[in-house]
Image (cartoon, rainbow, N blue to C red; front, side):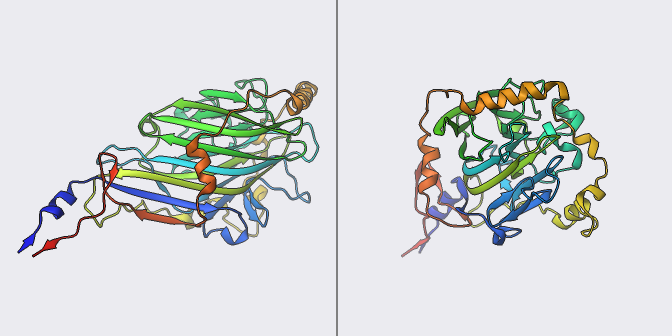
Length: 364
């Protein structure tokens, strides 16, 4: 006689869906396989060039995005549960020795149909349109920015900030760095769904010594983002430029959802071909021909502010740093994760936070 109780019990258990990838080095083979690029972004053997690094082309007035090929299930509409996620990436912002540089790099989450457009450059970092940089009603994203140019709404120094639908950060921390020499930095970003806490740990430099800083902000991501999101990096340059390069990237998330065993939520279909045609209607044409309104990018500095900002950037590169902080255990654990370019799996059901093995039907 068959005993079906385990199966019935199984049905009411919440399931945890895991999403994980580790790109310890990023190269041309990852283009379109793991990473999609748009705008002026592209991938080389040195990683993701979110804005161009080719000295044979104009580097100012550029905007780019690089996102993972699959969307992220950020929260479950049926249960209302939010995902936990943690990501680590290494990056370089390099001004090639110039003390005048702009504008910055960001890690972001946005609706899956969100795409970069030409007038999102400069201070918008590829996220917010030029006239909507501080207008939350016209944007939809949550981001962590590494801002290299102080605009009117920014602190008067390079900084790391958490941004919600606006380029005016809800919280910031000083970021001591060495952009003129293109030093490599690391960042760990994690979201604790139980605490609704978005945390950031990041490295920088002071007198060639590695420093660490951190910040966090309590936010319910369901209030600002849809159930499924695209995620990745965006960057921009204005009248001044810098190279924005992602060297490595890993990401993991888990979402507890009330689902029938054996079924997994299907992400919305993203029409990537349509996006490519909208961004590049004629592949033989340059970006400038496709988007002739280059002037809207301009959020670079005025001539009057040039000397002030050059002094600021010189000061930033050598200033004493905040008290070093140790990365959180969650962030650090990413570095020891075994290499795997992609893994998306249905994990075992969770009972009161204790993982239980799936129960098979027992017969006698």
